[in-house]
Length: 356
Image 1 (cartoon, rainbow, N blue to C red):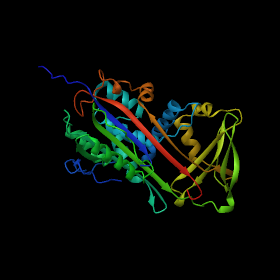
Image 2: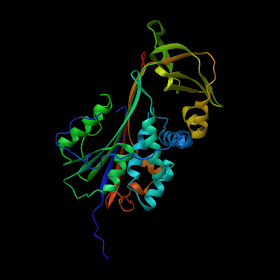
Image 3: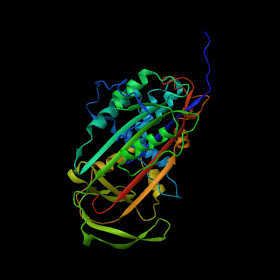
Image 4: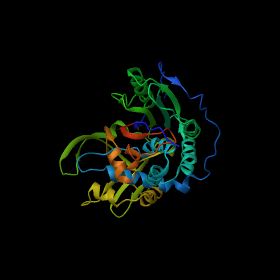
């Protein structure tokens, strides 16, 4: 029996932090074709939580450099890769589940339950959105089971579209709306080889439990790791959740409702950020965050706003999943034949100020 061979074509993963749906005038909405059906989640999210914490630590270690700040959203990266893993087979699947920490049959119900467990209030909310964009002017025939699985477990919006300039605008509009406008653009162009985009959008917006008053904000000097100094606006407060391990100390500052928290860690004198990051494991970090000590901490936190963009293909190759990015080896036959991942674009934005 012969098998028709096709030129390998590319999947793009775009993963945006702090990213809800804009009208797509040229895109055919296939969401109703793969309407979400009831599925079973997991009853105990804590059982596998250390695996996800460990993935976050490993990602940060692989991306951390001495040359620049690093800002990542591990859970956003995970959602986009987990959706893609549902189409992986053979060695490609084995490598992906090894890096991500779970096979699809465990990951899907876990992330389904995680997404539905997120506390939401008027003053503290974390929302996740997923979408799949399929080129209708290129030779791709997507497996219906793949789309149904991602609709069921990830609530993915599914669009079939010509992959032209109008689609570029639609995708960027989707991202902008899902980031409350904080990330106005994720793509500058659509590659002619790309036949599919899988996108996760994660947005967190919250007010502090105790906001900073005007008298608590004043100028100060921030000392960088290399010893240089930067003038900054500092927010001063007394916090009461202290954390400490062998190489660093810090505090936990809660958001409204105390369902979410901001954690600040400062390596000890003589320990660089890179050295501290390299010393972490998911188990150690989770244990540290789970057991803050009640003690008064006089904290000075600089106001800051920053964004970060990185293409993660090389990072993920080095972490142990090279086949997914190799057009000769990749097996995404659960989506369609002859596919590989061409890019994993991760864009993040954060702002920390008096209100939250």
